[in-house]
Length: 141
Image 1 (cartoon, rainbow, N blue to C red):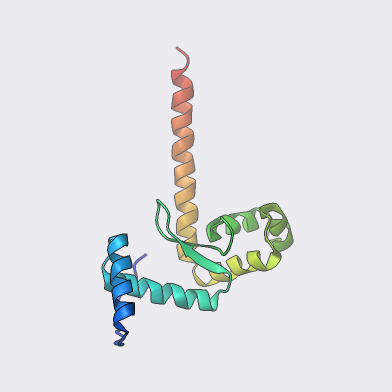
Image 2: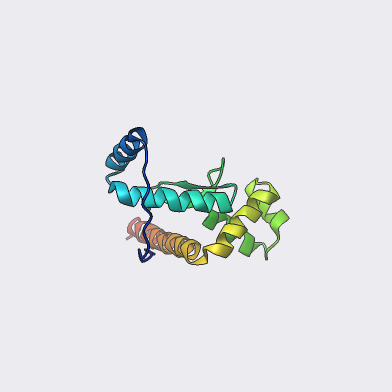
């Protein structure tokens, strides 16, 4: 889901900021300019969608609910399963309704990103279920 880079911004930063950017980028094994673009993008998304943060995980970086261990895709799956009922979704997930609405707002602007995570999760669940089935079958002759 890479976007085409078709514009540039030139800015000056302090040596401290440049050094910190390079150190963190090195630790994450990414190019400092790529990391700077990520920080700018995520910072703007956070400004537009209060209550949404970004987390790293084995499968990649994803949008999540601030202060909770729930990703936006998980909240959206619950909202869809609840026929769009925000209060029911909030109760089920142990969230406040405004946290569910933050996820909905984020999804409304970035549906392809969240749909990608939903699809990845479903594929992984199918793969693990098939593996479990094979393991269960191997228990019997």
